[in-house]
Image (tube, rainbow, N blue to C red; front, side, top):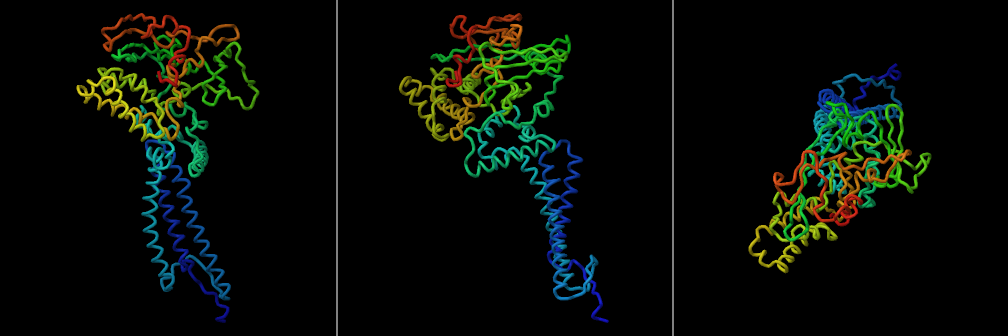
Length: 505
């Protein structure tokens, strides 16, 4: 009778059951904690979803699998020994093996719950950080990491724009991230990294969370002081009323720069290059269905049926393509440094010399950092020896300032600087607005695409001084006057005919 008796035995006798159970409970605790954070956090976090709905369930599943393996092992071993055993989940304090594994289980649960919850919550905090995106993991992103800290979005996390909330773009970014990791490991990534980013979330889902369309109106008064490349670094100041425009809430008129983004008109364009600088075709569609197509005489227009042709809807990023990673042309950086007196205008030709030194070719950043101060001092020793003694403090400050400008915008190891990072906000060193508004594009009826300067901005004061109150001024607007006497050439040619990316102007 005893041979046929079935023995009851707890499943928790095997050590693997203790490990699996501990992982199951720890993963469950992590999931509950993160779920509570998700429901109470003021903002969405794309990496929280990674840990909450992928990492935590993975730990839970791993624990369950290990426990099932322990069940299989115990059943198999019992059958091999010919034992008749009924396994269950009962607690058996009289079983020494069970008690030993119970204490192992409780110890593991306590340790794993603490470790998993702490490390799990810290993991998504770390991967959500700017340091993770720019330095810890993505070392090839040093140029972007550096310029980000100098931008107006330096307090906006990288993931808020590059990923944003929701699962679809998180998956896309992570799939693309695997490709980037592979290229980084095998050192096959592009130098410079290709831009624009192809899988970036639409601007309406990122930019407009802060810069919403209802505020796309008004005018903004700005002052730009330029310094010429003469011995005295002569200033030329322009006081300009920038017509932000959009939908004017006072008059109801559609006007100014942000006219492109008002909902009553949809702007589409076709670019023939990856950087979207060569635009031969533009289409404007009103809410009434009226369509105007603008092209240039003689331009070859690809077929819209070509699967390789992208007709892109115009959005914020087509002008504001460098909101957080602006590689400042050296001339602009020098103008700012002279205005703020980080560079002394009293140093003869400092703007010209600085421009030449910054635009020179250096194999490494370290070489540039070492060469720029030495060559600057050599120039003044050779041409203005009296300056070396009388203005040593200003020269030493100029050395530091030029190195800082170089370090913030030039990255030789990645072949990255302003010459490969087009900025479409304006039309100075890059064509920007003139990609379309060049005076040559016309619609099917012969009507030109606007090329009037006053459409976007109005010059209210200008002249050879740093002081705005001493400039020629008119509230009705002034005709632009070039700092150098070039006659009417500025009316016939784009700014970039002279102020090109190679010279940095």
